[in-house]
Image 1: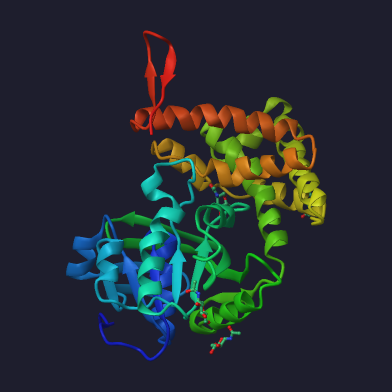
Image 2: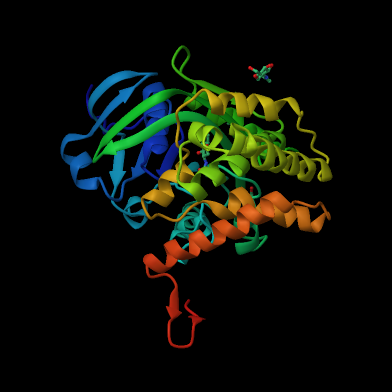
Length: 364
Ligand SMILES: *[C@@H]1O[C@H](CO)[C@@H](O)[C@H](O)[C@H]1NC(C)=O
Ligand SMILES: *[C@@H]1O[C@H](CO)[C@@H](O)[C@H](O)[C@H]1NC(C)=O
Ligand SMILES: *[C@@H]1O[C@H](CO)[C@@H](O)[C@H](O)[C@H]1NC(C)=O
Ligand SMILES: *[C@@H]1O[C@H](CO)[C@@H](O)[C@H](O)[C@H]1NC(C)=O
């Protein structure tokens, strides 16, 4: 397949985060050929610019030497051509407690500034294809009302198994199913923009992309799994079936960690008026028992990378506190994982502990 480079009549899409998810997202948009696809590729820029991506995909087959319409080493480079990006798709990890430079609100700032300079009246659509709950708050709290007047915030919940297995090499094992909707389900502009995105993303017979009218419901439901199971695997550094089989009586993890943690998520969601059916507890535990699998949170810990702790546990616990919902299991998991996260931060030089005073030194 050729490397593209031509321009397509249609919206301009900028993808930030060229990991397993981001590259398949870029490929799906490129394949449909209804938009211009630009990707910011940090670590693999040289190899991709020389030979393109090598993709082994359960949806699209084996693809060699593929490039999107344009690639950029940095966000600044992607702005030098003065293109208005209609859709800014963020597929990075969401770590609001990480370094300021890698926060979503920081990453977006120059792009939104550039878009406003090019056309202040045009809508910039930001699509966050990320896990967790309340991730839009970081953006809403960082920007002024004015700055967000012509910005639409879209939520993408993706079910896909795709990993970067080497420089410029992507292996997609699980079929791509994407659900898109406005973070604010009453936002008409977001509804419209979601439909437009679905139109440029959908490849019949290859992927599944649907409008999600109940974004919060869908996010709380996915959290049922993430908040209970991913967190535990990360804490103990075991794959999912081992966390079940290694337990006291082979059932204590299920009975005393997973089930109560999931019930607490259901209770928090209920305090917000969102009803998650109890059957999903059994459903997720059944899946876990039958699939040898290590969630990304566990993989991150093993690779000494920061985990998406705040959006998976910190944010739901904030809601629980606001609504007076008792969440002892989640709270314990969160506090233990906060220590693990701090250990990772110390190893990455983001935290300094003074062994003379035995105190944490304040850092920026
Ligand atoms: C947003 O767009 C409208 C037109 O659609 C324009 O009147 C307004 O000034 C823009 N807002 C900002 C903050 O640029
Ligand atoms: C809806 O989307 C279409 C493009 O699909 C655009 O032309 C139109 O202006 C949008 N309307 C609103 C209200 O955002
Ligand atoms: C989970 O597995 C158990 C035992 O195999 C079965 O009885 C139950 O119906 C399953 N539940 C769901 C929701 O799949
Ligand atoms: C948790 O595991 C789910 C299920 O595989 C995965 O989709 C998700 O990316 C993981 N999330 C985190 C934060 O590790």
